[in-house]
Image 1 (cartoon, one colour):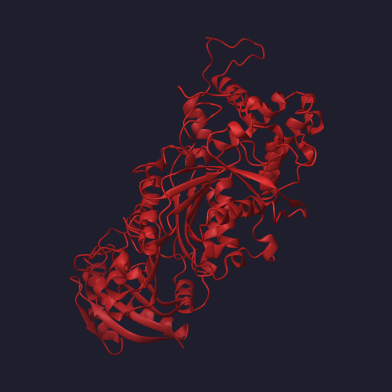
Image 2 (cartoon, one colour):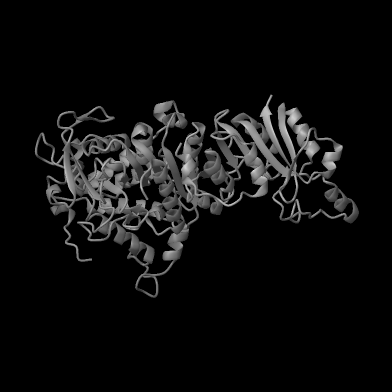
Length: 211
Length: 389
């Protein structure tokens, strides 16, 4: 497929995106929601011969993507997922965006409907440092994982790992893979998400599928 | 500009610069209205060179009041082409690399058969005897031209406004003959508001006594006032309120105070009058009626049970949809409808809304963001198509 040749070779992929890339089978169809400037899509096209599409909310991001030959539409997860046919993609990627959506529950359902697999990463608001910060200072925490003051944060629906797992259960989604992601982007696979993991994990990446 | 110019009334199709071809002589064009049209003439312009395997052709589709003179001097006005900014060596539609062509639409008045053309049956201008045409008919006529040129598959079909409608129609009806489609500031269907504005324009023309029930050519008259009013009204819809304010505000025209009369006191009035009076020198009133009608009839979902996505089912075309924030004639929501329909059939689509205060006409103007995006899209598409850089 010609798709593999259009994007120039990129430098090393951002570590957290590399973890997502490692989950994706070569030659598959991928939808990256909140694809930014297209770093992951370009990498996947070049390194894994992936037929990729993107959705991005910022004009600068869309322009960067389209002008690099990527197929990206200006839109967002809340409004632009309902049109896609079921199982249109092998993988749907939602990287650090879930908590910024208006309706994360619906978005999660849509991800599982559109893709055979959904790769979802987000910040764990149950991490001990966030809990301690809130408990001790009485102020909304600003940590490495969150990075922004409460008034600047895009995350309008903060959740913990346990919250997420409970929602997946409720929606009948199976967690195929789960890993904790360190601030430097190093990944560590975990079996099940228990109370200890919920306390120590700063960010997590899940691979989900329906049923 | 020094190019020799002629008033429209004195132009005969034979004297127009560019190419002409008579089509439909053996197999007439069956129009949506049921009439078989043939033979008919298509007048077109081209830039650049068609490569050996005829894979580098870009078809530019023009808007309501455009024509095939997208680049280079216009034979009537002497002004530069309406997409001079896009077409040429090293430009977005790079004529060192691509073969760019643009045909006057069916129903037009720059050499392609239209109501001002001579009816082969009578030798007199068609007038209202010209059959009512549709966007689909325009595209069918273009497809016959592409057949005539031996081009199996266009690399790209691109256009703004009505040109964008044609690009969509091409992708829908001739998906296997189009590699990429770029509808800019377009819509999948004319809204009630769109039809309403067109109807005012048509009524202005038909209310002009010099229209003579459409037979003005035979009587050596021209419905200038009616056509000018139609143009003035339409021109407002091509601009945004912000652009009008920026350009004119409430500034007065060549006077310090209002005259308490009905002269063009305001600059905006003077501007519109100028737009109207220059337009009638280059455009045929009946063509205006026919082409606005074709746009009003445009509704891509209608022939697919109201489901727009069905118009693109199984499409292999790569799309780049572009809209403008201040376009209230075909606002972004219309382009989004196209994008959502394309998503519904998992088509390959890029979409971008360009931020500008220049309104619908922004597609004709120097919009660096649009040009950068299009350059990248076309570059990417060319690589996928395997065209050399």
